[in-house]
Length: 249
Image 1 (tube, rainbow, N blue to C red):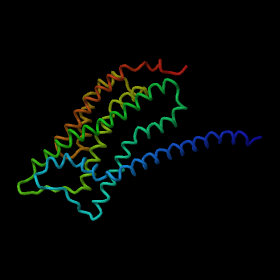
Image 2: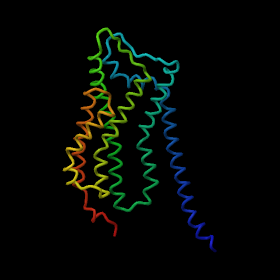
Image 3: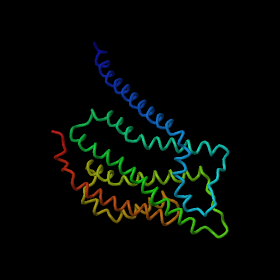
Image 4: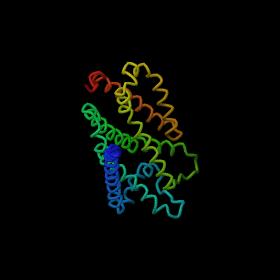
């Protein structure tokens, strides 16, 4: 009789572990399927990613591959990250399906818009980096190159450089979601956020200086949108119901 409560307590825990394993397996399968489907197009995907640099390079110049296996491994690496980004909504859906049964109704109503906004902002940040930041950065770097220096970029180093920029802009564009979550948790109020504007502006430029290449163009193109998105987060937080109204009876 004394062991019965222990067994009853262990069954839900094991059930959660089994469900978690199933969710993780589905996520891995989704990434694997997208990765395999993208292998025939890996070189085309890399050519598309390299377009912002190639458009700014002098006529007749090309990118180079320093390592022996780079022409084969670098497109595959990019294909994996592309599969991960494309599968992100499905991965978040699996995570949501796992945690949703344990949330209150008001938490579910707030969590869904936050998840959708987080995914949309991450994609927006990556698109902003690709269409606006990369051409501006490469145009600036090509313009300041010393006379007589042939700028020839390694394909592997270029991929690492672009992925870091994508990650930096994708995460920094999550500022409105982070602001709303802080208000939801009760850690700050919209009034306190407005009072912290000067510190946020300084922090945005510090973060931009750390995450971006050592050029003024990319730093400004990251810091200024972060400040703008911070203001959007304050506006969104003002529309949230009062903390007392969100409390579960």
